[in-house]
Image (tube, rainbow, N blue to C red):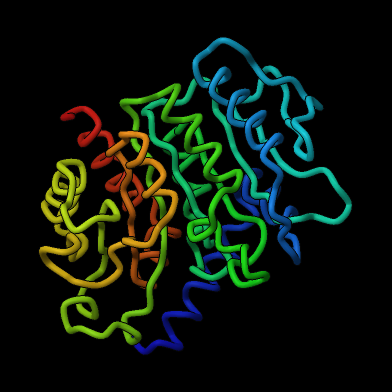
Length: 285
């Protein structure tokens, strides 16, 4: 499919689906034009509070403040949102929480405005899979020198990831990203539909099992970095690096071609395939 046609399909599917998700509508309203590096104190508070919530030791209340952030939701609602409240949004990101969510998958879309479709796809997977936690960036990765959250020293994304690991150490963190096949250097990468890695040159058992499961379904040409393809291995991803320093090896980086993102956005059955494979991987490790 021609690159322009793929992009048009992706944009069209995003627009058609936008009205069907209240979570997605809320996330769209949180986009800011700039990014401000957060202070250490609020980051620690957010990490500590979320770890308690995920451990079942506390519950959020509508309007509760965490520094520049606020919880929104009702006690009988499945989803809570932790987000900025300032008139001038500073790109601190948005966190969705389902306290009763299972399986223990933290879905992340840290480049949603650059990797088209990943933000809405993360919202749909979060809701369809009844996952406990989701994260979205709320400033473009290139809005400031520090606004690429996976390549900066610390952020709310890092804090929430640490909290998840503390509370759900057997869970898995899945980051969604997108790539353009025509921009890849190698034939192997250009031919791939999905490239998965753990951010190192030694793929984890989780990554290998997820790759095997996705390939066995026959929907996508799933490749594992670096054994199948030598690009897009997330080796400079600082969230993955931080987690490994803490002894956490259950991070999965998922790169998707534009066609795959478009398919997943419009086809609930294909999202079920991805969610089922994640569930199988969790159950097997």
